[in-house]
Amino acid sequence: MFKIFAKDVDAWVKSQRVMYASGEGKRFFVTVHAGPGVERYIVHNMRTGEDSGFTNLGEAVRFFNQLSVAPQE
Image (cartoon, rainbow, N blue to C red):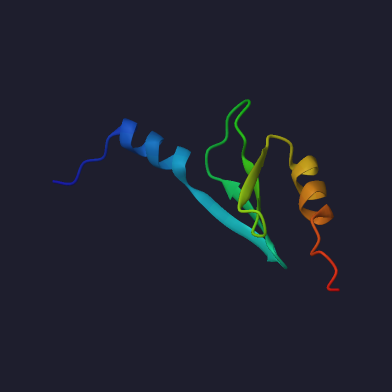
């Protein structure tokens, strides 16, 4: 018999990210876990390797759109 446990489901949900968009040197992720104060939207800057987490979708989209590739010299 196959059984699942709530604690395992909860742990899985809190650890999952889905990539929504990707551009030149940037990626936009949405986490599966949704709760108050949880950083559901993550923008990954591939140039610096840093993640920026957001609870507000509008702020995350603005940040993602403002990331740009440095001009070539």
